[in-house]
Amino acid sequence: MAESSIGSGEADGPLEHRAGFVALVGRPNVGKSTLTNALVGEKVAITSSKPQTTRRAIRGILTREDAQIILVDTPGVHRPRTLLGERLNDLVRETLTEVDVVGFCLPADQKIGPGDRFIAEDLAEMRQGRRGPKVVAIVTKCDLVRPERIAEHLMDVDQLLDVDAIVPISAVTGRQIDDLVGVIAGLLPESPQLYPDGQLTEESDEDRIAELIREAALEGVRDELPHSIAVVVEEIAETDPDGDPFAEVAPGEGRLVVRASLFVERDSQKGIIIGRGGSRLREVGAHAREGINALLGRRVHLDLRVKVAKDWQRDPRQLGRLGF
Image (tube, rainbow, N blue to C red):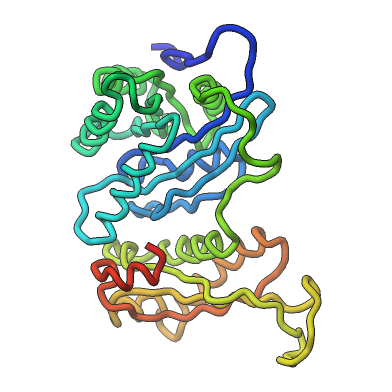
């Protein structure tokens, strides 16, 4: 099977400007966040080898002369075991009802499984009578397999669901990313630009900082811990570099301090995050600070505190306080 996409989605006739919302969906850890960053051209979604890294519908914005694509990187659809898991699945389903195009991500290095079929059934139900969004099947992680495996996977995907296009890509190498952009743009409705030039996301700095801290905390921890980690940015403050709490400091001329709380569910998890003598927490802070410095364009002092919010994934009140 050829490398190019199956079905172009391109409209005939004179070129019109198109704009709309595109949700990337799929099982956990199929490459949705990596693809979002590749399409936008900048890191707007955190990535990790741990499943269920994404917990919010993060919007990345790709603007070009003929189209504007607003990407919604949704949490991975999974069988929920907690109230948080139920809310994440509900978030995905709600998102799918509000977008123009769905990018259904199916990794080339894994066979189609029950989770993929569950999502396909949902999409098929939404598209009855052509009422639902357009659907592009995106075969991700093509850099990890041989060409003949990609061909087999494309045929399997074609049998899974009636879609408007199938595009094999690699977000890591950039393979066929431009082709995917063209296919998606051709399926969007005619519309003027929805966001100004230069805007890459509608996430606030506080939200992006919290995600960068959580990304740093996710690496190197045991499998059961990632789901128990939540981060809240408590304060971003410009302070006097000499430590005078009463001094007036002009924006950009002081010491920028970011204070954040990292929540876990049990005291034993708190010990894992902090590490022996605070060594693990220092690593998390150093890693997160690199990303925060790049995001804000200046050096920051990061003050991290680890707190226990017992069984917060199952507690509606605590979920609300943590932003879920």
